[in-house]
Length: 117
Length: 110
Image (cartoon, rainbow over all chains, first blue to last red; front, side, top):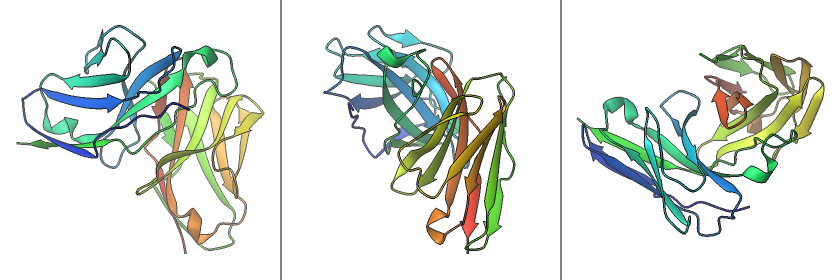
């Protein structure tokens, strides 16, 4: 399985942009890049995902390197509520919609983001 | 909004007891999952189910079993609880690209 590497922790000031990096040098051509986050005392929640092109949604933006060996989750204005552990996960799209096991996610240790008021 | 609920937030059981953890989702999702989360180890998949009465082992199924009699409900069973099963247990359901997690059950086995 392709693995991801993330920094253990990062800090950001409130209302400033945050760039959370993820390296996935062994990514295959059929791997989607997913990001989840886990707020304290809660289950993980989906943030964003992409395959090749950059993606935007109401929560964040995902910038994917041209060679796909790294990606960056961008929070445009960090708030205190964004303090969480952020997980970068690869999922093989060739298993998508095929039933058994197609939606397994393998979580690593993630990056703990602290937001300073 | 999708809702995944778990029967208890906190549970304390004794070694050897049979433990049932219940999970219910309200969005008619076919896929459901049970994970456990431990400090330093992250989330690890115990079992998952992609249809009623269908189940598959995840990465750490030993000491656990599951039941999926109805589409909306996925139960995790500890046949004989042991202290090394003290953990946070998270249930999730999914449709296509997104998994929705419940709030978790913190289980302590004494």
